[in-house]
Length: 190
Image (cartoon, rainbow, N blue to C red; front, side):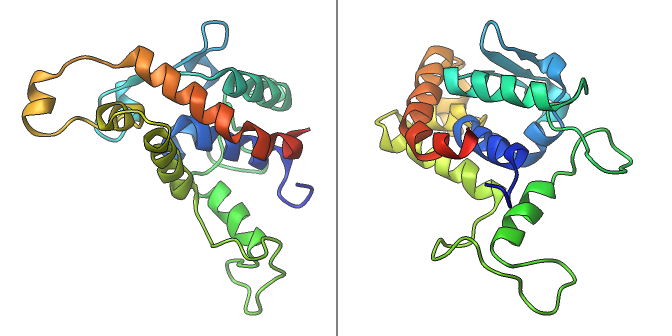
């Protein structure tokens, strides 16, 4: 973790249990989060299809967000920019660059750096979104819950007639995914 950094590790874990797009978390202000209720309300203007969502937060996500809040030095953003930047939050590609660096891939470098990831297949932040979606399915939730958990609209007649939000089912899905990965990632967050 020393090479990757605690902020990168925490945000990576959040991407794994939230299933959001990289910009949705990278640009999120603390004002969207209610850590007491365990909810994150992403407004319409910050999502791809223009239809906001309330994401139920697992107990682990709430804990990791508290850790990030302590590390945000009073910033109004969950992932504030750390160096001179035109924006007050990290760039949406910052985490991908950090992941690439762990694989020995650095922009502008002719000779690859050391690969600290071993035999792990290269991945990006978006792959963590896919992993979340796959885990929701693997844990036995229906395809409708899977799609709603990543804020996809339902297709065809199902989308036309089914206006149910699946909030409670999504809450259960987010918690079960977090429970499933907690033991795999927790040692890295201490």
